[in-house]
Image 1: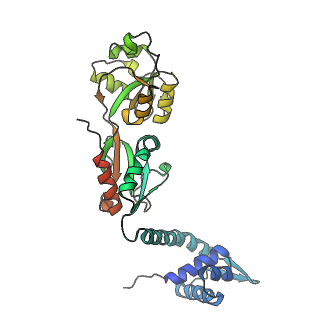
Image 2: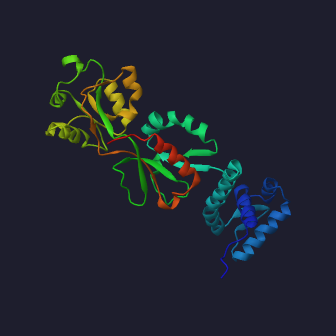
Image 3: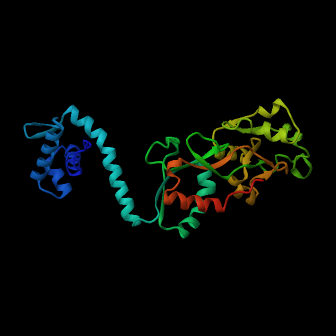
Length: 300
């Protein structure tokens, strides 16, 4: 049985007329006559069996039904337009990848590497969607996301990127009483304030535990909800922070931060490229994933 779907021309005429509340202005936008727009809207109303507009004293007003219908169809029309613009711009090659990223990782690690990606793959466009929208892959405007965690998220595939190598770092001079400004032992770090990330509260306990130090003191200290804030806290001399190396390469190279103890301990969590299984074959995603995996951290 044929699906109940009005013509695209009729829907475009209705949407434009509803936005302008004028057949004349809608006709001007669509480059047709005012009569053509009015006819398309009347045919749409006839096929639906519902009045979408009220004509009151030469004014055009949406009915309640028309307002509800507009709210439902407008996103779809915008999606069709966006897909068409993307196709025309890419000429069928590459395409656009809609991606969300953890803010600190995006700013400190990913974006500085993107010139290399675009030089190699000018046919691909990256469109970053607001991180605050979360990781709902049921939304059509989200193809992939960079997440921090253990790599296991229901409903998505995940490839490890970076972030598992964490370092205890602080401002130079904080450990001035230690030999060579470095803690003589992991236990010695407990003599200083430990700075924590709110989403990884177990980080210090796990790190010290790997080195044979078990204590409740590992859970004490200020907490920050972004690694950027945690880094700034360490730079300000508030204490010692455990931070993924990938986020502080610049600070380590400049000497703004120093390693408080040289032990190499891998965190259980890191940054992953995540994407729904049904989108894994998108050309833009395949290209971006392949490029990312070429530079993935070796954690073994």
